[in-house]
Length: 244
Image (cartoon, rainbow, N blue to C red; front, side, top):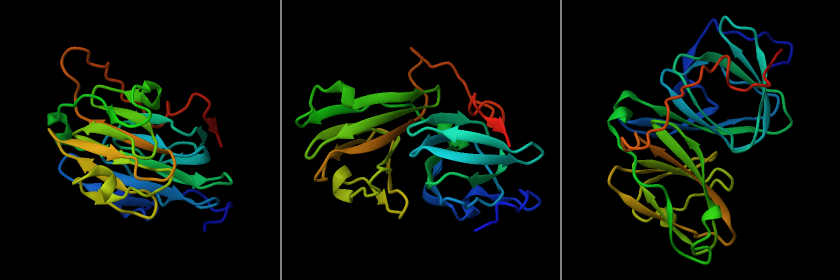
């Protein structure tokens, strides 16, 4: 664990896939998806984000982001916060809070531009059928959308590909929960890829209600495109970012 007094060093930069706190769980020709966990008092190695990427924060967190050639900035994350950030960020992430930093990073590789997004998640069966408040769209950009789903025991929700399904709060995505979709297991967070033109049924196979996060990848139909809004990761992550 690095000392608080150690300076932030970006003289040696690793790819995000080689940074040990960023766990590469799923990769194909369209995306790479990472489950990230940084313990309290720990910091990530200086790493590079080579592609535009979606960030979903699965916990409230206080960090210092020390970007190369920039003054370190103190950032406050909120649980369920989402962003689409541009490629090229090189930085150290230092967890200065009392709890682990937990998030999911989904890189959008160039071929992701070929994908067309399917319809949003919808209830198929279960006690909450018709309870649309349990499916909320929490992010929408031209190239991706993110949904948060509250799913109870034995509920069924249809997920249209191309999409990534994650359960970042209980960290267990039993393969039975998504039918014949391949589940990639990881101690931080399991992830599953739903291919294009595939419909997967997310089944509430737990004993209590759980939260699932669905990253739908690809452009929306021509009608109703969201306005492209890729954010600069150094200056607009958070309005309340403070120099450290």
